[in-house]
Image (cartoon, protein in one colour):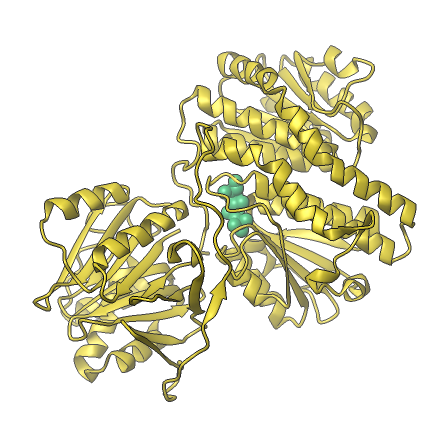
Length: 614
Ligand code: AGP
């Protein structure tokens, strides 16, 4: 989503802001802008549609940009098209703001500001918020009072960076729901949407709490409570050293490198949690008994993480006998009945910043449920909001399409389900050790799979050449979840209209869409579903569908006989991990279809890596 970065201090503020926004580009960006206080004390704004490069060119063309205090923004449009006028910052010669979130009562605020004589230059909700702040500042003459009064009128989610012309060396920050951090530097201080913008090495920061206001000067940070309490200082938190600079490792795209990283992501996530051949989550501070005692365990997540959560719920049910279910986070709050104090809610999120998932987690806490976060980003908002955070160790995932984090999430939840089943006495040590061995072998099995990439490239070329229009993905049991994830990948990186269906459901309506040449991708990694999957393949093939099957194995050749092409991902059957092997093959398939179409794979249109608005 939108990215916020502001700097005040001895360095060139605009240069610092551009560097900070560059690190936030992964959140998606269709326009960008920066407000700065010139040496003469004027509040100057430059902003334009397009990626950050366009803003950099505009700044370069504009001559001197020296400044000690500046505030920047990369926008992912929610209200109004990505145009120069709708780019942030927004405001007046007195006050300029940048915003991440959605002001839900912006229409009423806009009407009120128009009546007050304000003239809108954009279609954005942010401009209305800027004018409300300006109005209170004009009346009260104090930035903290103005922000407090304005916050009382705003509804929705927001993280604001604010610059007042009368305070040329300081930034103000205020948030409700959307995350925001204050970064501490040796030279100066900054305001940032997330840790990624705080640079390499040790990162010192303060998370801004709900409703809290920060006043950031080059050598100090003061915090103000939402009410009229006195200002205070807060302890500095330290984020672990960042990993080596993120490059593509010689691959054409981050996505392809991150698929190649999957074996190592699995080793780093699983091996520290397997001790003497058995699952061991003691270092995570997880209360397994509390989880087992929960009448219901809910998973909440979005997108790819929700597919991982669904597979996690399946593992919890099968291995530990837990009543587990996965809910799309944005639908969770309308679930009925909601969890209660005996239940556990597990939020799955690679970024740890997804607003829908964070909101669901907060709702779970309000219902009294115990909350667990499975995240790939330590110190993220979701990790901090949960009672306990369990981290995948997949490394930073740059490409918008989730790949290695998905594989790591599913494997971690499989291992946790094994630990729970063993704790519950449903799995003996021998079976638990066997499952741990299977999980431990998955990294090498993936490596062997990736050695066969050319077979998948050939299938993607055939698909690209012969298949156009709507593509079906079908599977049964856990394969229906793999089918859903694979359809999402083809949609988001190759823009192929695709949808997944439980294979058994096709005959109840959707099969009406099948005609000669309709592409159907069948997922068949679960041995117990083979016979019924064969029936589904024959159903669609008899109506002219072009069937491409991704399976774990096809010992009797039946799948091959029922398909136009078959890819068998496994060299030997391993029921716990075969679905992940097939999922990885389908990630490569989608990737190579997108390459044939020369799509912008790492940053697909309209998408952001971290969706921080509801
Ligand atoms: C996955 O390919 C997408 N980028 C998207 O569905 C993503 O999984 C979803 O937005 C959830 O993100 P999170 O894991 O950071 O919460």
